[in-house]
Image (cartoon, rainbow, N blue to C red; front, side, top):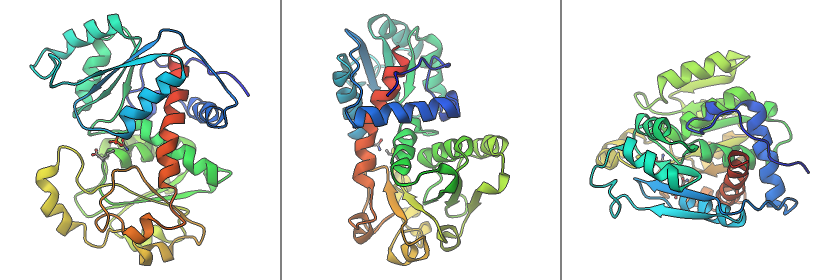
Length: 308
Ligand code: CP
Ligand code: NVA
């Protein structure tokens, strides 16, 4: 057992704000919390939650994580605070960071998150933007590590929309040396500048593959991962995307082409019979609810490092 170390970066806005060593350290701390080998009490620390989009897992896991650390959370609902009335981010950030010790923010634009971080005197955590979901990626790789000894032996195939979740998987996969294959319809590839950054990080450039062929992408894969086809804020694209994403459902046919011991992940919430069939979602291969549980342990570990 070992204690949390302070992270090099003040903020966690992107998966790239922490090093590979720090990422692995957070996973070790998270494992200790999960196994009840570590008990840390950070007296009187307050986490402010600013969520411009809905959330079940991220919000509640942050609240429970702070409670387990002996601190508290303030849940700022934009519609009942002055945020929804258009108070500038730079003012909100300067005020809230005088009350809170850390802020977790879920919003649309990554640039708005960066604006909060610029004006906040306290650390800011990305609780999901349109570009990245780095807290989710912590729990995802924690779940993968529970199944596979070495990240370097893992083939992770993400099937679906090249969205925030896919972007974070790519970035973490790059510094962890995981083979990451993304299969999405043409025009729905992950963010191109993040793909470029990932290629710069990968020692072996062949380990990242972006394809439009889900059948090729699943061959021999150890982890099959999917997420909703239309993310929050894209509700008006739902009908069009359901047509374009035909063939990108994780079903028994695709699963049969993966490694026989492959596991299934989904960040949730899920739309059964869209990105994943009910049969696969509920199958013995699914680790989806371990993954959801790990959000709590991973964020407790992240907070314990940030609040050192
Ligand atoms: N996976 C995830 O972030 O879920 P919530 O939207 O419920 O927080
Ligand atoms: N890509 C999804 C993830 C939800 C947790 C969204 O942004 O809505």
